[in-house]
Image (cartoon, rainbow, N blue to C red):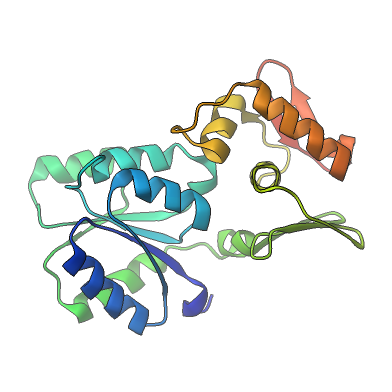
Length: 229
């Protein structure tokens, strides 16, 4: 994967850190996105699907440990690499971070060359198969293109509303895997939006009408899965 295709979400409430770290990583050719607290980080992560999140621990509204734990519960973000970016090096802070699902720590202040080297090391953990899936999924005669937000079935291009697209992408990301209703709600709608269970059913019905009834299977009492006829 080329650097220009790699997305890094930088989360810190200190403008100087955002500016300095963002500048050095942009100079390396990465796509940089920013957030200033945990709530904003979760929302942005669900929109851009970053490859790496550099997450400060101490932030207002929602700290990094809580944000990390919530991100790890989102099925579509299972493969994102999360490193805590913090000036705190107490054992309890690091243990809490790893318990929440962090992959590593970067201690600040950090020299630009050390930072870039650390980021490169973290990004080597990316799996090529997951990287390919983030741009598009091809299953049978269906192609789901995340970059341009369309679904192609055979020779027909289908434009779906955002939530329908995200729901289909989630289910198709792991064919024949049964996604529980709670997981679908968390991954597609998030924990900050209150929606009823019927919301999933309505979106599945619309997808069946547009894509075909046979692709979306109901597992009674559990959830849904995407399967090829």
